Image 1 (cartoon, rainbow, N blue to C red):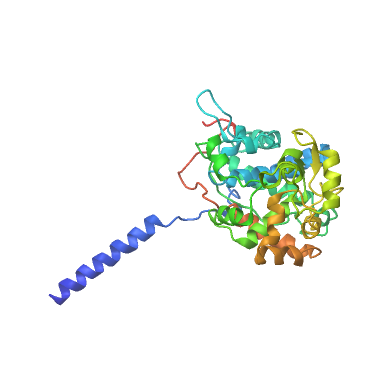
Image 2 (cartoon, one colour; image 1 turned 120 degrees about the horizontal axis):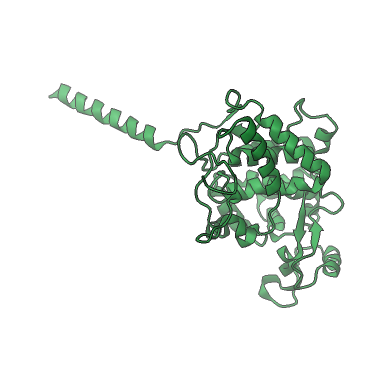
Length: 338
């Protein structure tokens, strides 16, 4: 009887171990995933991004934003690149994504890789690599050759596969809004496996790029739904300057996120947040939580620490709900499912 109980216990243990094995995701992402199948992948993507950067230095922010907007919806699966069809409105046509750019850079890199290594490199991985290369180029220490020998701020794990689903409504539901408060941001980032430090660090991406007036106009003219009211947390002198540039209904004018520094990735963004001169409600929200506030205030001038943290948080974000092994596919054209 005792031996029988022991045997039953052993069987249950084995079954439990097997259940845990099949139900636990195996993360196959790794640095150098394509070392044998397509060893020139990083070089090809880097050259493509560098060429685009040489023509237009403002391309860095759109490429960084593409990766963020990709990972926060279906996971880092390249679904943000898929075109809409007659029967489906895709992510790129969702309202929060209508100002996305940089698709041509991804398409060019993909075309080159398909010639070199057909059917091997995913669009999702190209987006992740291009974001790293873009932000590296926007960093002065990289441009001046004072960072790593390969000119990369951080190493990118690869091995993602491309998703088959892309829906605008899912993008609207999952992408953080520029008008969100700290509790909304915290909840959103937590759902992607990111903590408050990651929120503060990745918000630092706002150091580069531009914003349309309608992304923050409510702070100037309609704060908390009160017509004519202004957000008291926004520096009043700075707000007066913004009002001269952005009218209440302006949907086209663009402003630099960090005045006179929108193509340089550094800690100037945190200085603006600390001075209550950041454009978005979601930027100001960082001052409403001890963890995020402390990070902002301690990194106003601590650039090296921020760069290291940014790499760590980007890699962490890049692991969100990735498709690996036989899930998904390797798209031949990033805009169309095979």
